[in-house]
Amino acid sequence: MTAPVQLPVFHVVGFTGHRRLADPVAAERVLHQVLDELRAQSGVEWLALSSVAEGADMLFARTALKLGIGWEAVLPLPPAEFRADFSPDVWWRVEALLAEAEHARVIGERSHRDDAYLDCGMETVNHCDLLLTFWNGEPSRGRGGTADIVAYARNLGRPLIIIDAMTLTVRRENFARLQTGDRYLAFFNRLPPAPPLPPAPPAAPEPDAERALMLEFHRKVDHAATRSAPHFKRLQSLVVGLFVLSSCQAAAAHTFGLDLPWSQLLCLLIAVGVAFVVLQRRLQHDWMRCRLTAEITRSALATWGLPRALRLFDDFEWAGIEPLRRSLDVLQRRAVRKHPAGFDEFRQRYLTERIDGQLAYFAAQERRTKPFMLCLRAGLFLSSTLAICFTAAYAEHRLLPGLVAPAWVHSWIYEFGLMVLPVFSAGFIALFAIHDLHRRAARCYEMRVRLETARKEATLVRTWGALERVVIKAERALLQEVFEWHSITSFADSR
Image 1 (cartoon, rainbow, N blue to C red):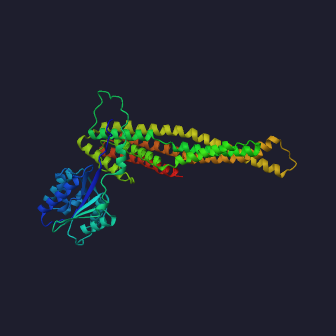
Image 2: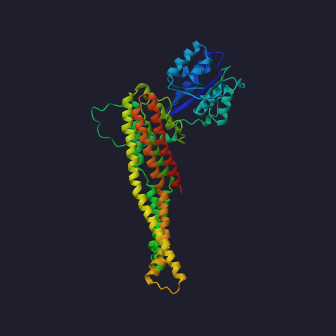
């Protein structure tokens, strides 16, 4: 049996420390030892995250790079402003370090200088699994100092490795909360591989190793989601139908003496059984996780090769699957550094595979949704109208005692009809709510309009920056649709 495709698990060690160290050589030796111990942990690849202030920050970045640990830089200010804190010689070394960073981002675009340094330290804590620090144990001399960042990490319960800036002794805090690995990513990694595809044409170019890994991972997660789709909406519709049928049998027994207690009981038992299946949260949870992950990886593959300055997924909070987001982000950035895509090649691929593919998907969804919605509307209108007419006729008959109605009118209209038609109307309304038809139809139309606009813009742009903005706008719209579906489905299926 083929081994399942597995994404690497990345953890982040953040850093904060003083600008001046008593013995930089000894400090580097201790730092090397601590990072080497982290790197030796099996099943996890560590990433380093820090600013590049003179002193401990630069020492941390250089040590991580020497050990082969990927390093990401977080800057408190834009480089043009940040360089004012350095002499020309030191700034030259900072620029050399930044050139080796896997990613660099600016925190304080519009902040006051001191606030920017504080925000930078806090963002380092927010995005790390473990905070490593050189700290002398004393309060900060200014806003955003090491003591402030350590206090923030402690309040959040982050695991800490504190290296005394004077004695270089190492102590650990809150290490019981340091959990290496991730159960959700482990679940996806354990999924069996998807069935093999037909052989590709000989002329097809071989993808880079990271993209090949992502393609196989996406295929197996998408296959698992498709294979195990529990069709909750169909099951919920069946429950509604069985309750309506049971009510019709009760009305028939009352009106016509057609007593079918065992048939009615069977309908109710089946309805309760199906409802119990719908409420089995484990099956639903795993299916929705696989479907959500498949769509996220689809977005990652669609933007593969885009040399973007911003992370596509930074604005989304994915509860429970942050390690997946991190793996996708790291693999993409590493691949684009090794195999940058050409502008025209990337644009054509994105237009054909992503935009046109999604336009076809939403058009198909709209074609399926509208007839179903029209049928339910017609059923609701007919049952409600007949219920109103039958009720009005019955009321008129009661007000006019001399008015004689045939026996079939009494039985079929005044009794059976008045009992079952409101139930049918309620059933149609329930089906509208279960299938979320109005929102789906409106959303499909809205997404087609947004994607058609993105297609026009992408066709006309001529620079990477402009294309990046179009792609990010389109992908965020598509991911928002995915998360909206996830939220609505989670709520609807829990009722």
